[in-house]
Image (cartoon, rainbow, N blue to C red; front, side, top):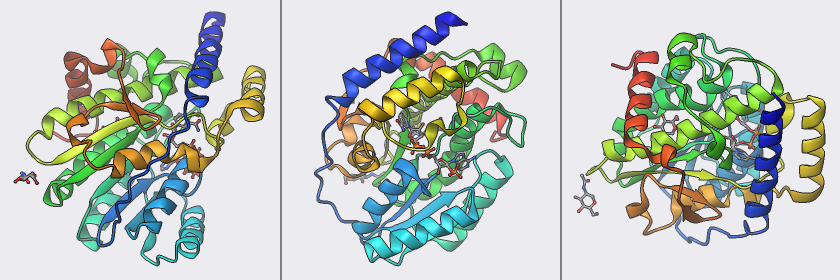
Length: 318
Ligand SMILES: NC(=O)c1ccc[n+]([C@@H]2O[C@H](COP(=O)([O-])OP(=O)(O)OC[C@H]3O[C@@H](n4cnc5c(N)ncnc54)[C@H](OP(=O)(O)O)[C@@H]3O)[C@@H](O)[C@H]2O)c1
Ligand SMILES: *[C@@H]1O[C@H](CO)[C@@H](O)[C@H](O)[C@H]1NC(C)=O
Ligand SMILES: *[C@@H]1O[C@H](CO)[C@@H](O)[C@H](O)[C@H]1NC(C)=O
C-alpha cells in the first residue's frame, strides 16, 4: 500500500518537473476549420472546454459530447458567445453507459453529415461502476471511448483525411494491463481507495496509448490518423473525487506550484488535431507538442491486439 503511495508521489514529482517546466510549447498551426465538424467529449469544463473553444474559433462545427445536459448546454452557450460561432451544440453522451454511447452515435450520424476530428478527452478518476458493470475508471476512460470510436470510424473514413485524438496522461507510464482482472471483474485493478483509483487511472491511460497503437494499424491506407497525448499538468476538476489526506496535500502542492491553465493544457491536443505534416506519426504519443517515445509495454503489438479483442467482446462489437 505505502509503496504505491510513494510510487505515485515520485511519479507526480517526476511528471511535474519533467513536463511543466518544459511544457511551454504552443500549437502554431494556422489551419482553419470552416465546413469541418469536430466532437470533443467531456467539453463542459477543463481542457475539453478550452479545446472546443479553440476549434470553434477556427470555424468548426463543434459537438460538445457531455453527460450533463445542463452543464453541456451552459458551456455551449458560453463558447458560442466567446467565439462568435453559432455552430456549437451540446449532444448528450454518458461514457459510463454503452447504451448512451450507442444512442449518441446514432443521433450524431443522423443529424451531422461530416466528422473530421474526434477528440476523446473525457476522463475520470473516481470510485464506482458503470451501468454495464465495468469499473468506472476503466469504463469511462477506455471502454466507452473504444465503442464510440468504433461506431464513428465509418464516418471518419468517409471524411478522410480525418483524425482521432486520445487524451492519455504521463501516468500511463506506471500503468499495467492485467487481463485476468479485466476478464473476471471488468476492471483494471480491484480496490476502491484513492490509491487504487489513481492506479486504475494510470492503467486506463495505458489502454489509451495501446489503443492508439492498434488503431493506427487497423486504419492503414484510410487517411484516418490517430494520436495519444499527455496534456501537461493542468488546473482542472480532475481530482475532484480524490479526497484522502495525501491527495489533499498533493493537490495543494500541485495547485500552488506547478499546474498550468487550461489554454496551455489544450495545446498538445490542438497540435495533434491540427498540425499539418504529422500524419506519418499516426499511432504515436505526444507531450508538449512533440512526439515522445513510450515504454515497450505501451507499444507492444501483442498486448495492444489482445486489449482490442477483449474490448470488442466486452462491448458486443463482434
Ligand atoms: N488535468 C491534468 O493535469 C491532466 C493530466 C493528464 C491527463 N489529463 C486528462 O485530460 C482529460 C481532461 O481532463 P481535465 O483535466 O480537463 O478534467 P475535468 O476538468 O475533470 O474534465 C473531465 C471531463 O470529462 C467528463 N466526464 C467524466 N465522466 C464522464 C462520463 N461518464 N461521460 C461523459 N463525460 C464524462 C466530465 O464531465 P462532468 O463535468 O459532467 O463531470 C468533464 O467534462 C482527461 O482525459 C484527463 O485524464 C488531465
Ligand atoms: C482512443 O482510446 C479509446 C479507448 O482506449 C480507443 O477505443 C480508441 O480506439 C482510441 N483511439 C485512438 C485514436 O487512439
Ligand atoms: C489518401 O490521401 C492521399 C493524398 O491526399 C490520396 O492520394 C489517397 O487517394 C487517399 N486515400 C484514401 C483511401 O482516401
